[in-house]
Image 1: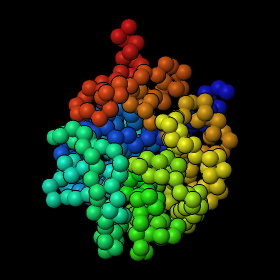
Image 2 (image 1 turned 90 degrees about the vertical axis):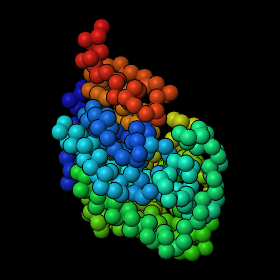
Image 3 (image 1 turned 30 degrees about the vertical axis):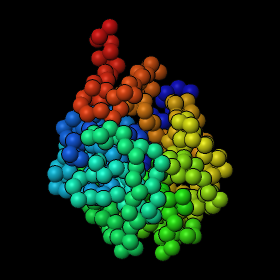
Length: 368
């Protein structure tokens, strides 16, 4: 297939937004937000990658108690709004589009990573196995979180809506709700982390309630055309376990999300990183129930991405790690150029090294 016939590199529609191509840059935690505030270095990083049709930012907490990792950004203060404006302006200046991903880490956290006065909260007081990096004391066990009260859950729903308004103020084109990878929304979905007996636990409908209420509140704040969600059935991230109703849970959720008219559903398959594969029947079932834009993510290369777009299995395709070391990934794929390999030792370290210093093709050619 010639490049001019390729769907991947042709313009796309996302609700009322026009994207320059069908390539999405995945949300990638990079831990460069010193003091949890976005900065000029981050603006450079995202601006370098504005060749993507859509950029989804790294996980960004709508509240102080969702900042479970070291040096991840938030979006709940004037300083954070100002920092994110640098980022959105850099991306828009190059014709890109950018959504901010709301990621509340829930029980995946350590107190040393949280701002003063914040505490680790989750659906239930069940600790996640494993350790968490802290800048002060390196790796530390993840402690038992405090279970949120029913009133606190409802308040947290509204905090997402308030943060969504700030996202628009900061210049974002929209918001992605992180319902994947074992963080707070998925903790509510999975009975391994949710043993509540109130309206947010027990049945499929109750476990889905927090995700749907957050989606509803965010839509009420900024409009359905600006709100998407990311889900990762079968990922087992964050010490979550498979459960008997897993498929039914996600098919129900997809059906309800379509009723809310979210602009997209971003479905992640982590099998390339060792997790179980999302069954083809589940992808098809979600596709049947959610008829707005479906974004697929998970170990894609150009050929497989094009095949899934041509078949109608997906509407947009996400690329993750290749964007770390290839700021001009779209251009490289169009030209069938070799992709640079990233340095994993620098994924989460402060500073420009391994972040904004990966060269583009033209710079590589000049250096030869």
